[in-house]
Every structure is written in C-alpha cells, then in structure tokens.
Image (cartoon, rainbow, N blue to C red):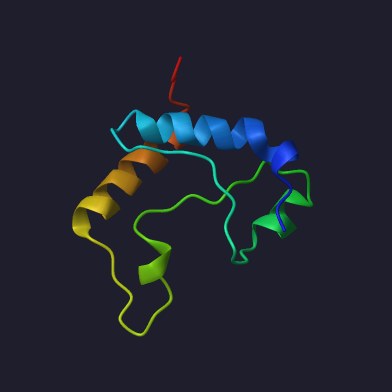
Length: 86
C-alpha cells in the first residue's frame, strides 16, 4: 500500500488545489490497489487523484460525467502550473 505519512504534504497540496475549483476534497484511504506505491517507493511524492466515482471505474460500462472531466482537467492544469493555494 501507499504509506500516508511520507506523502501527506503532497496529498494535502493536491486536496487544496482541488478545493480551488469548488470540489470538496479530503484525504482518505481506499481499499483498492494502484501503481502509486511503486512510484512512492522511488521517493516520488505520490497520491491518488481522479475525477468521478470509483464505483463507476473499471466496469463494463465505465463512464464519467463531462463536468467531472472538465473539473479534473482544470485541477491537473493548476497542479502542473504550480497553483498557489495559500
């Protein structure tokens, strides 16, 4: 799994950026696996962040609402540009 303590600062930054677009964002643990632990093992700050609901992901009829996709694109843009959330 992904060790929370070593990635908390990065995860908190991502949550803060996400809140700048009006999305209620909080840090939680999840009961599924990702590649995040392997990335973190290389000493790269890591968190899992994505739009939509995990209940819709990786299913036969996987889908995401367009507004969720647009919000995600804005969040990723702000992260890439080093958004100031202070």
